[in-house]
Length: 483
Image 1 (spheres, rainbow, N blue to C red):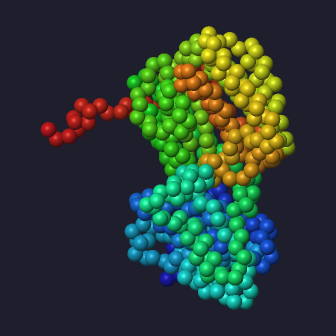
Image 2 (cartoon, rainbow, N blue to C red; image 1 turned 90 degrees about the vertical axis):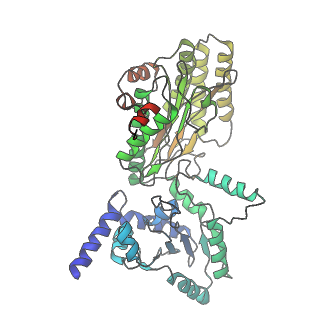
Image 3 (cartoon, helix red, strand yellow; image 1 turned 180 degrees about the horizontal axis):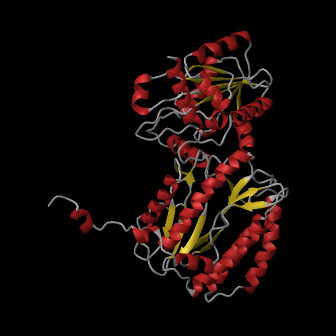
């Protein structure tokens, strides 16, 4: 019997530690930091994600995974302020389900759970109500609840808030978001306690990434970059946007990604003028520029990288003029990023170089020059604000939480993605790179993906995945079917 228990414990430990990036000490340190920001004698109560509704691999809420590393549905977490003493509440073991789907951490797996994340206590989910009631009777503690929509599959707070707004504006939909229902339930259960929002504390913690977090983000970035480079190799007139989506997914999944960071933005020609175009049904045409913006969800961390290239493998003269101007301005921003300065200072220094680039730039079309002037003018205007970020944060969400506008600090991770528009032709040019602020500088993790004209054209002459495997024609599909 003891041998069977040890074998099961080993299996569970292998499951929860297979990713191997975050130690129990790191999870415990995060909870300790959180507790120190809370009122003494207070408690924080967090709700984990529910069971998936379909045949989809379970993915935990970001903030819950950040504090526990637990990937069990219907889990709950209670952290005591100041001390950081932590209780994790899990459902009881479901032997029948485990025989079908494999082992899952449960309330009975105390040792495996503590080896994963170092929590002090492991209880069943049903025990939390009694524990909260006892706390309420002894002393009505301040209760911290996560009062923002929790992030899950390819989700960021901006779109989750839009989702909430769409429901509120629909007179026929009375859905109450799960997180709001939980806030109401705990508020009722802990009647008399002051309820505070845990969101600002967790947002500030997630703003600065640990060494382990940065390593995972770098892996996600490398996979994104390799997919973009393979996209360049495989692009030819006549293929469809969705084919590039497919080859990227192949690269992500054979390297262990758990899904998409966001839906792929693969836009040919004027489709790129819609920044979040994701229909992916159009055929690539000779003479067009293609935009590809796509990254994986790797071990709960994202990236966000964009490149553009000519469908036929060579920039036309006018494309080279516009794109070449843009790249020089874009590099001016990248080259001025450094730690311990405000983003607006980086913008101001970049603008000086942009103005010099604009002055020497040549354009065959007057409206192309006007577009370039507008690009520099708009960037100059943004550099005059008191606080203005360079782009958006990246981490557990593609548009990550935390204020990136005040000062660039070591451990910050973000992208830049300024856009140049030519409205007369619906031309849109945008690149995006991932930057990690270090103690001594800024590491552009995605810089190995060519953005210069010669480098792109050289890479596009190489053989790609889609040269080896082409999509099936209708005739080929029918050839496999019984006649």
